[in-house]
Length: 294
Image 1 (cartoon, helix red, strand yellow):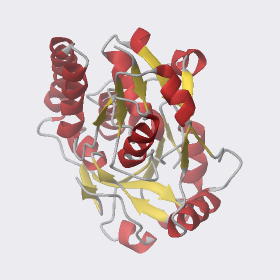
Image 2: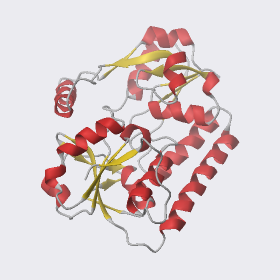
Image 3: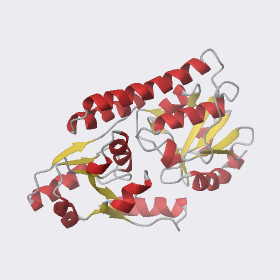
C-alpha cells in the first residue's frame, strides 16, 4: 500500500507501525523520524516561520484566517504523481495542518481514487484509538493493537508510581504571545502524570486567555509546551512569562516532540511531565526534552 501523510503525527504513527517503507509522501514539517523528510516526497508546504516571533506568527495566522487564506499549500501534482492508496489527514485544526476537505477537492479535480482517512482525536484515549484506525486501514490492525497495549502498559506504570501522591496544580501554556491555555489531549497528559490541570480545556480546543486567568488558580507548576517548537524554542518562550508566575516552578518542554502532536510520543510526554511533578518516584526524563526555567 502506498501511503501519504499530511500530518507530522500521522508520519510518526506510520513508522511506529513499521510501515515506513510504504510511506511515499509527507509534509515539510514531518521531522520525526529524520528519514521521513529526507527520503520522501514533500507534498505539503507552508511558510517558514523560524525567524518570526510568537507574536508575529500569531498575527500572520490571524490575518490569513480572516482573509480566508490557507496556511498550507498542497502540491497537488506531486501528490497525484505518487499514486497513493491511502492519505492520512485531519480536520481538527486549520492552524496545525491542511483540512481534509482541501484534499478531497484536489483528489476530485485530479481524478485520483485514493482513500482519505481523517484523524481527529480530542483526548488521549482518542489518540490511542487512531493508531488502531490507521492499523486497520493499512492491514496491520493486530500490530496496532500491540503498539497500543505497550503504550498503555507504560501509562499504567506511571499511574502506579504516582498513586496516592499529592497532585500539584499545573498550568499549561501552549503559546505565550498571546497566551493560550492547554486543550484537547494535553490536560489528559498532566492528569496521567499525576497532576491537576488548571485553567485548561480537556477535550476541547485551546483558546486565548489572559495571564490573570492562568495565574488565578495559583499553579504550583507551569508547563510551557508551544506548538511548533522543540525544547530551545520552548525555553525562550518560558523566559518571557516568568513575571506572571513568580512563585511557581516553570518548565519548558519539547512541545512538538512530546505534547502537541497526537502520536506515540505523547506517552513520552506523560513520563516527562511525571518526572517534573514526582521526581522522587519517576525516572528522569530523557536529555533534551525538558528544562527548568524557574
